[in-house]
Length: 552
Image (cartoon, rainbow, N blue to C red; front, top):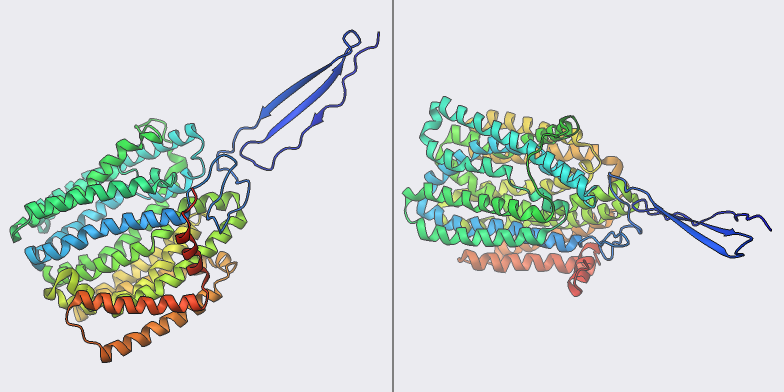
């Protein structure tokens, strides 16, 4: 009888995909008694890496996706449009309500609402810490590992519960300790409800899974209900407290709804195993960045209210509200890109740079003309939103418009480059520098130049932050090809300026709505034609996406 002799094992090559590598080892074993072959397959699977999963193919600029063999990521273009819609609807609510309430309540009551809101915002900021950006960045890397994601989400939720409790306690102490705030105590306590609802706001969980469709639907439904309530209950100046309550309901109801609906991703509840040492460092670093942003965003309102009075706060708030609308709409693309960029930065370097290049090119060709349009159309915009009583806010908006050309690139550098690459300490340095500059200028200039000084301070602070952010991300930016975008933008903006100067000399339209539509449409058409003639890549990509539905 011949003794059995196994043949040499045959090992199939391992796949390049780190997310699920599989090997098969096959033996052909012969025995003398049966003279047959027994094939034994041993299949072993390696555990997925907890810090993220690579794609089988690099980022595809044409389809705007990165994919794995079984899962396709949502289109960034679709997400950007959905997030823009959510942002616009969140801002359409005050756009519809503000012209009404500004006329009904008056500048003084609007000033009271915004002043008390600026106080509450500091405590709400502490309740939120730096959880959102940190959770999105880290959660995007483990979102396909259900156990790890659930554990991570519960830890983040527990940290948020503790921070919110501390924030509310500090708020109560400050309100009772400072006599100057007693006149605003009703508004303060109503608006302080946002501190508690910040805890259950889990938008970061939806952002991890890039589920912007649900966020959009939720926002529209809640804002529509709030709009109806406002027209029913707000009719006279003394109703400013009711208006503040409705405004709180608009945001808090959406947060509560989102908390219960988030069970489709994971079940959130407090946990004793928080891993504080792992999370607290980057969370506090990003929190310091949020503090700096909040300071130079709200410092103007606070100092104008303390030095100039409620009426000037009301005028300043109009300009800042309009500026915030434009900034948030432009930043929508950057916001939805954070989870995708965090994913690609760890797994697909070429895909990361390709996406970075497309995003920055789009930011360039949108933010600079948007700033020019905001300046050129400031008069009809203010008159449409707030009426002739707020005409003094027009020059304020014209000054702040220049900050828009800086704020959008700065948001991109922060959210698309520095945070995904774990350079949050650099972000803190740049934003803290901007906050210091803003506060110093407010204290030095507002007593002499009034509210206009606060507007100038915003522009200079944005310039400081943008320059520092550019310096800290210079090694990444130099890998991008942005020359054509700058040239196309410069030519298009020059044509807008020429068209505006011509309209100022020849066109005089009394109706602000008609003025906005005619001149705004003309300026946008001139810029769009210029980009089309120069064959701008960002415009061409957008037009291709319009011609066919975005793939999911």
